[in-house]
Amino acid sequence: MKISNTTRLIITGVFIAILIFNFIACSKNKRSENAGLKMQDFVIQISKYARAKKPNFIIIPQNGAELAFQNINPEMSTLPTFMDAIDGFGIEELHYNGNLIDDDGRLKMLQKIKETKNVLVSEYITDKKNLSDAFYRNYNQNFICFTRLDDNYHYSQIPDTVPLENSLNISTLHDAKNYLYLINSELYSNKSDFLKAISATNFDVIIMDLFFDDEAFSNVEIEQLKTKANGGKRLVISYINIGSAEKFRYYWKKGWGLHHPLWIKRKYEGYDDEYWVKFWKKEWQDIIYGNDESYMSKIITAGFDGAYLDNIEAYYFLYFKND
Image 1 (tube, rainbow, N blue to C red):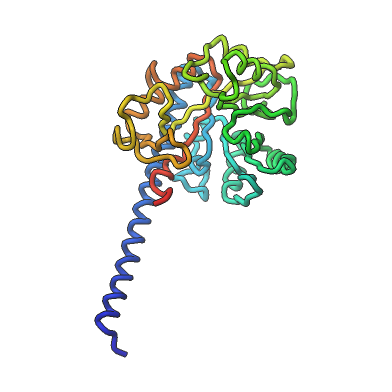
Image 2: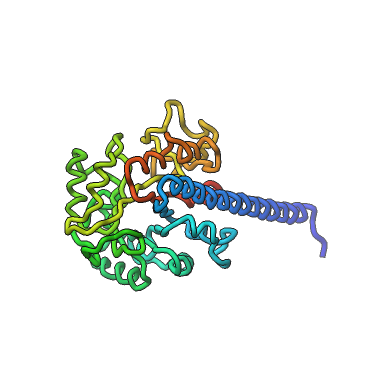
């Protein structure tokens, strides 16, 4: 059977397209893996810096569970240096992202992680009738669970009930039975009301922002939150975004934007004020840790017990999301 020149050209074009596609995919995979290794090191260095200043300082990365494993490969064992640098792992939408979802891959990773570290899961639920199921699925795995509904999607409300409420003194993350995730203070007209609302709760762990509006909380203010309403001691952890830059933060400079500086890599979809960054660049890392003006230094100075590191999965979004 003879093949026309036109057919040959089409076959050749398809073959070349497949080669190019595979080359690009392999290239992205390699870049993503390298960036993942850099994020592992970033978290480790943040932990070393913080613990040199405060030996029992707690580090909890959020999402990107595969970073707990050697070569960013969940089929391998966990990475000792990374696991030693953290005290727990935070995960969003494990069982519920609005409705019930199946995420067996992440669940298997977290089951390995929980052998040595606490896992904190934040579920997003659109139907209140699923609240009890979300708690059951997580506590059945020995994960600590926080749930939020539609009107609390951005972590701005304090739930009415505290799961496994207790008056125990919580000195380590391992002691905790529950936690409050409250990083958005928009519903409070002033700092005093915000602090009073938290103080009136019995959550074992508080995850909150370092700032109310643009003003950092003081050591005295954070210290008053370390006692539950029932008298038990608890932990207060500061949120910090290490994978994307936020325009509303103190470090943002006039004239900054996409690719200005060059390490501001791409837009963060769904968040107009955020950009994914090349987090391995010295300029960004200097903002996060390593000096007295760094974000981590401000958190430690304010008296927080630890830091909750958001967007550690930035390495993935830099190369794959919407490409």
